[in-house]
Structures are given as structure tokens and as C-alpha cells.
Length: 311
Ligand SMILES: C[S@@+](CC[C@H](N)C(=O)[O-])C[C@H]1O[C@@H](n2cnc3c(N)ncnc32)[C@H](O)[C@@H]1O
Image (cartoon, rainbow, N blue to C red; front, side):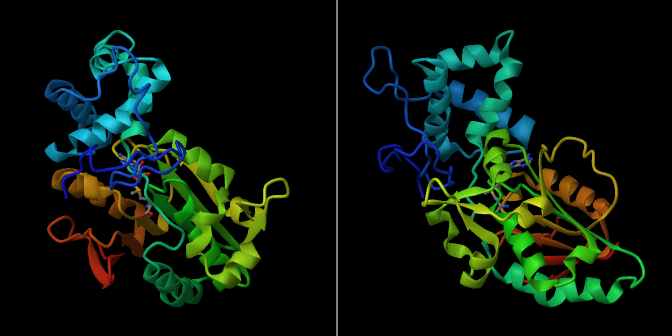
């Protein structure tokens, strides 16, 4: 669907997630202020999307010009600028490098939910974790490593943590850790804080909510993830295009709704690198609209958008 500024009402909640459907939490700077220019030229659009492609792997289609304008507008407002051209002059100027991360933060689509694509968590609880348990050496503290790559504001890694805690009564006998990474350094702060609005919690099953979600004392509309969940998850900034500093293999990787914005070549390289980092027999969960068909032959299909590393 064509995504035009005219069709999409501008959300007033600046903290709202950029959801990929035009429902950005950003709004233009000083609409009506003198010099304010409510558009982005083709040249500036091309510059911004080239930065997104080269730096983050994110390919932005022609029809997303208005979406890019809305997202860049947030930076214009923060920097007190009136036109995207002024902003692009900063990007191409001597201090342009400093503006790359804020620009990437503004451009990323962060839509996520607790227990999004719930069949993955069912598969984890009923198939993946019992299999890991069966393979575990009874004597040693079994190492369990899960990576949520492109974790956005944390709903995905906390859903993984709740699934782990709920289905493994002996979790404290495991050396279990969840790594949660994202290129967007701003959205990661929300995950690390582990505090969510009451409206964000709707995907969490009631029983899990009572076990793992705590009401904030000062503010009854916000809820925090329990200490136990937060101890399981570590949030780190990581651009998937960059070298990965982690050592050791993962048992399970979630990389869902991230590569839809990447070219096929970038996807091929990325899934080859994931295969190198997942142990043989380990699992990869991807988004419902993503596929490894003609992308990687190092996994076999193990379920709906679920893959198992075979080589
Ligand atoms: C649509 S969200 C998906 C969140 C979660 N995985 C889910 O499925 O609910 C995509 C996330 O991928 C992140 N992302 C995009 N490009 C990235 C890159 N090159 N490296 C790391 N993360 C990236 C974005 O910042 C965003 O938070």
C-alpha cells in the first residue's frame, strides 16, 4: 500500500514504536514555522536511503519517501533544523559520521510484541527445550545460549525468557543466557529498562503475567519485567553487518522480521554467518514472511518459519 503522509495521521506519542505501517511516533518539526519545508527532495531521499543500505543493510523502496520524511523529521526537530536539505548537509559535512547512528535509529522499523508469532514459543517449550534437556549431561551445569538478533524494545527476548522460566523448573541448574542485540541504540534502552506500558502486555498469557510481570509502585500503568527475567537477558548494541564479538555457539537464534528489509545477497551472507554461530542441530526462528529458500542450504525446515542447522 502506498504510504503517504497525507493518508497517515501523525501520532502524538513520540515514544510510540516506529511500526513500519506509517504509524511512526515521530512528527514534523515546528509545522507552520517559517522556513519549515514539509517534504524531502528525491536527491535527499536517495542520500538517506543509501546510508541506510550501506550502513544497516536496510533497503528502502521508492514509495517510502514520505515515511522517510516523517522519520527524518524527528531529527530535524531535535537539531532545530527546518529542511531536510540542511540535515543532509550535516550528513555529508565534516561531522556527518556523528549523525549516522541517530539517523539509523530514526529509520529503523521497531514493530514488535510480546509472544509475537506465538507458535515459535510453543515450539520452543514443547520441542526445542525438551530436546536440549534430553541431550544434557546430568553431571555438568548445562550451557544454554539463545540470541535474539534484532530484538527491538525487548518484547521478544523477554518472551523467550518467560518461555524458558516456565518450561524449565530446574532453570537454576542451567547456565542459561539470552543475548538481545539491535542496531538501534535508542530502542535498546527500553528493553534494558524492562518497563512496559499496560497496553504492551496484551500478548503475555495471564499465568505468565502474574508470575513474571511486576506493577511499578509509583505508576500503575507501567509494569516491569521481574528481576529473574532481567537477569537472564543481556542487551547489547550490534549491527548485524558488522563483525560479531561473541564467542561460542548458540543453541537457538531468533532473527525475526529483521531481514525483510535486507537484499537477498545480504540475507545470504547473514544466514551463512548465523549457521557458523549455531551448533549443528540448533534452531533458527525467522519471521513469518521470511524464508531461507535460495538463501541458505545449511538449515533444514523444522516447522513453520523454523529451521535446524544441518551443516
Ligand atoms: C521489526 S523489528 C523486529 C523485532 C523482533 N525481532 C520481532 O520480530 O518482534 C526489526 C528490528 O531489526 C533491527 N535491525 C534492522 N537492521 C539491523 C541491523 N543491520 N543490525 C541489527 N539490527 C537491525 C531494527 O532496529 C528493529 O528493531
